[in-house]
Amino acid sequence: MRSYIIGVDLGGTNIKAALFDTGFAAVGEVSVPTEAAEGPEHVLGRIRYAIKLLTEDKGIGLQSVTCMGMGVPGLLDPREGLSLFSPNFPGWEQVHIVNELKPYYDFPVFIDNDVRVNLYGEWLHGAAKGHQNVVLLTLGTGLGSGIVSDGKVVYGTTFSAGEIGHMNMYRQGRPCRCGSSGCLGRYVSAVGMVNTLKEKLGEGRSSIIQTWTSGDNERITALMISEAYDLEDGLAMEVMHETGTLLGFGLANVINLLNPEVIVIGGGMSAAGERLLRSVRATVKEHALKLSASKCSIAQAGLGSRAGTLGAAAYAYRKRQA
Image (tube, rainbow, N blue to C red; front, side, top):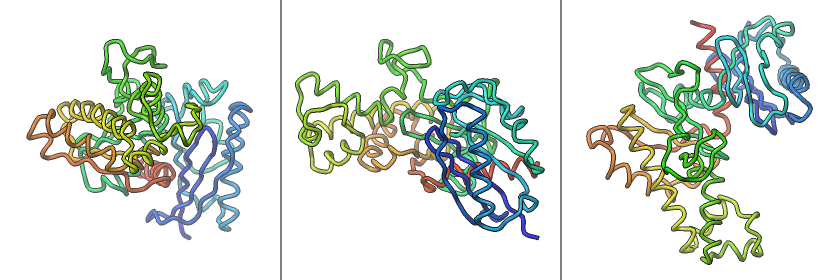
């Protein structure tokens, strides 16, 4: 009998669930609305519903599933299977996901932070495959990160190691929800880059983007900045350069501290590609330790939207085999 692994990517908007064989070939995938506003119990039910759809669609019985992994946003204790807090899930505190799912499944369930799950995906099956020292950054609404050091994923005392997005870049910068200010993620993220553009527009600068939005700055997106960059819009090019330069300074610190072989840039904002990475690489080359920088490549993520489910499955399979 063939064995299968389930990977679940729990998002604030959608729950993605995917089925893989033990060689990590994709067998099937489903996506259902999370309906997070309905509370933790409802969300857990939505997870079970996604798994039911997934296995029934492929005619695979639960007895053929060897394990399941899940990427969960927010703070958690992966050893206990406990989600402590997730910012996009109302009422989501001290939710023991593993215990809640145990009555429904005979196979083991493992959870980890959603960014670390993406790290497992890129490290074991994506852009960082074969490397022993890896840093992953996900650039989206914020900046998430994870670390592999000497072939081991780094967790830290409270399972929150690798918060690169909260490196302080300015003494008196933009306020951050962490309670500090001037954090890297407040500038190097889709939201951060848009806010940089808005600030410059507020100073009286102009951009073709204003024509696209009819002057409504709330409609500005990071994608628009990339599109305006391609049209050689001066302000868009300036904002992209500033964002890449600041990320470069942050990564110079990361390289000096962790000495990675590869830094993988993922998340929706990574679609900016070389528009952003050109300034990142130039800044790293100038400011990181020369030997460390010469041995570290900066690459775009290779798995795209599959990183969450594939990473969750790979993580669970490693835990199951341990």
